[in-house]
Image 1: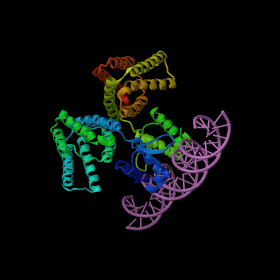
Image 2: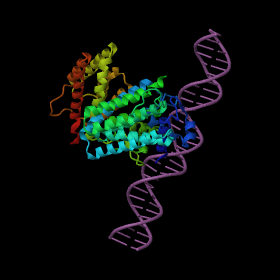
Image 3: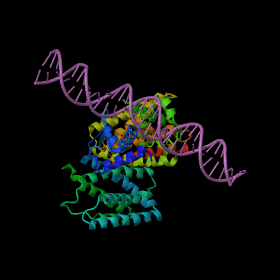
Image 4: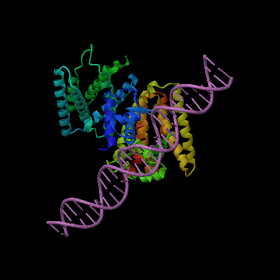
Length: 220
Length: 220
DNA sequence: AAGAGCCTTGCTTTCGAAAATCCTCGCCGA
DNA sequence: TCGGCGAGGATTTTCGAAAGCAAGGCTCTT
């Protein structure tokens, strides 16, 4: 892997996980010492991140971690719903046996870890990261048979953006009725495998809207 | 404007207009002499273009102008329809007087030039470029009131990708029944301004599907 | 004659210094 | 006191050289 690539991944991870905060200026010297690389790979990484809307650069002002706002979150989430609803419909129409198998497999892997962590009181950072990965893999598996590389690309893109909000706000369901996310996933999976298209899309949409609402408190 | 930016625009324009052909390798030395810049700005430009899917780079093997294929075109076009249909619905729901005025204005500008060039036998290159610009501005105006920055971003993105196909194939309606594009635009505009949402979306969809069909011959 | 390994070659990727740019802050004049 | 105008400093942007890599050809061995 080239240096530029690995720097890109490190930087992206740091932004997504909130180790670099929104609006934080990304001075080249700072990044240089932080990641132990030179200007060129950094520049390349920052450019790629800019294309993903994770950093912005005002002209002449250098790069800055993208700001967050409720409006941005809702925009991203609604577009995400648009994209995933379409992709899910197509996957349901075209998915074969291998696709069904992958959906079941990724759901199971997610469910397993989810229950295990629910049992323990405090989860390690690495476990949470793994949970995030399995969550993403499940949602990706649902859509994978859609047949459109572009829709899958947009899934990755929007997933990253919304994940940043999720990891940033970190509101562990205080007060409000605790969601049974596992059950939501299971229902989506069943509707999908039974090819109940409209119902599956509705469940998926509700799933994401609820996620956005759970995050919303960040405007406080 | 920085050197990287202007190099980016030149390169993008050359790819969109077909002065750099699909699958053509983009050797750094070649680009260096062509645009009179050094490695760094080139690298930056190529990275941005890669994010827009206009160039690809196999690992280690340098950059290449993105290949074209009927499948790619259809994928891009169907996603484009998805995005623009949603944006148009939102614009129709939210658009104000200023929006309507812009729609009318951009349509008029497009129609004017379109008729003028239809009269003349052969159009200059600059005229065709201006026509493309006004065409884009009209479609953009339709959507502008949608309220979602992301949707508008995706419009720009997908517009560029599909435009490349349009300019690349260059099949001036030989044989097949000539389209009355101006009329299609007018009908879309009227349905939109009258807030006939479903009809407007249908017309827009048909407009794009017809465009894709007109381009399709590139698989020959 | 076929296969394996080494070298050459062309290109990319990385580097750190030099040039350009932009922002800040202090000074001057109104 | 306020606004405009540089000078200085910090930061980005650009450059060309050097290092790194991968592919293809060549030779040497079997």
